[in-house]
Image (cartoon, rainbow, N blue to C red; front, side):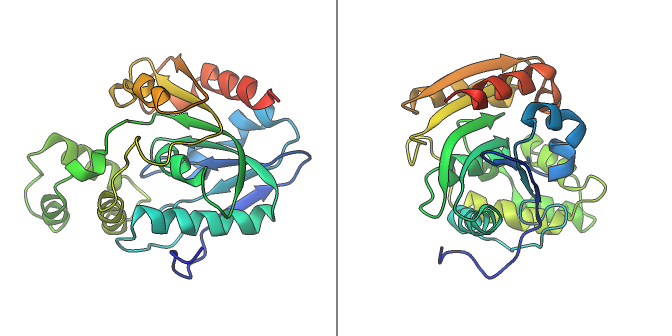
Length: 241
């Protein structure tokens, strides 16, 4: 795992029995917000739960404009330390799903099943006008581009570090998500909210994955991961041999 800097991410493990489940949250959030114990403890039963704050999120440090492969290496190193050679299942949402796509094939990990929620087949970060976003942060006019405005709005939510998040977006955009490259070879569950435009392309993503299925649940991009139907689909999928 040579592509990652020597930076320690914030990672917690709730002990239990059986195969650990790794949870990767979305942009401008953090592990405890996207994967609260009250929602996921009943799903996991006694299985170990591993939750990571992604770089520049929550209690994890900023990493500057690190490329996607560098971020994935950083994640893999943290997870390998927390799981010590164990086979794991991975559940990612939005940005977490984008990273889980690549993490599934990382040589430093053994991944059995992958859940990809709220994943877009396109690379939204490449569309962000970073100079306009940074100018707005410095007190300039709001970005005219709606995607940039949306991302900036998420980055500036209370508790976030907007400058660090924009740096992260710059690094991820330098190595865009491409469904034609590195598709997971494991069994994959693709989950999208019925009212989430970002997830409307998950059928196309499924076509790129040899062993996949698609489930749609109620809600938009923010509500879908907290829907009971989302948790039920994940529980059923992870319970399979």
